[in-house]
Length: 317
Image (cartoon, rainbow, N blue to C red; front, side, top):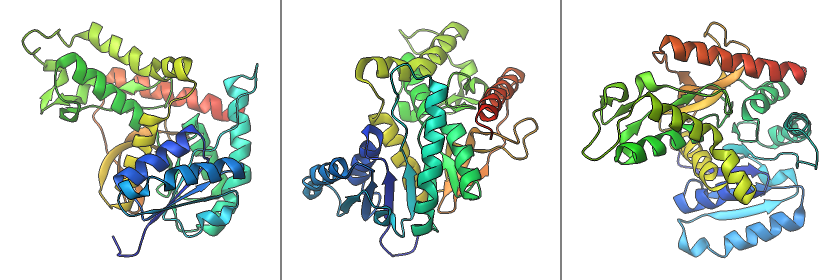
């Protein structure tokens, strides 16, 4: 990494954007964190609130504005802006409005931050990422989605809880759509090097059988719904997950993360954005790993791609 100070720009100062700003400041990810939002009063207040805590975090500056120039020369731009759901509006209509918003905001940001790596977080993230790639013309290593990084973290948490081990010792991925058709890769999951499929339960712990796996899968898929029902939005964990991705880029970490990119080179997946384990470094989402898949997992991934293809078609993408 070169020695110059780094800058992270976040578009959208809502629950997710501010959670990313907050976790980025605590983790000392960038020297400058910039917030862009169309509501000047909101973004000014958020910046003021965050500024008052700067004494307690690694050295950084936090700036914000309703003018796109605040993003100038950013190294990484995180896009969290989304259309607000109106009463009676379907998720599909909401997605359409969000794509429209992406179309109106991104080109201006690209003008002031032409060399940035762009991370899309707004849902439905795979479709929004695909649209953003079409809008900007950026290659998929430089513009990609947060994908199933959070879903994989939810999966690891639940497996760890079930098996009685630390979440950091669990290695497993969710791939495909960030949504209902996502696939847990049980066949390649491990705990401390032991394949999950041949895991012997620790004393006093339940078996990791197909029933447990199905329960965990359901819980991962429905996690966001449960949180939204209770508090209106998910923000802390996605804030940490997005910050982790930004860290992998700015730190040139070559970290393997299941981010959402166009799956070129994978038969049946070429024309959609979905998540597969990918090496993330200063150049963005670089090389996708060739993960061994069981026949069921492969079939599930193709179904996931088909779901996304159907959504894209509805938006004329």
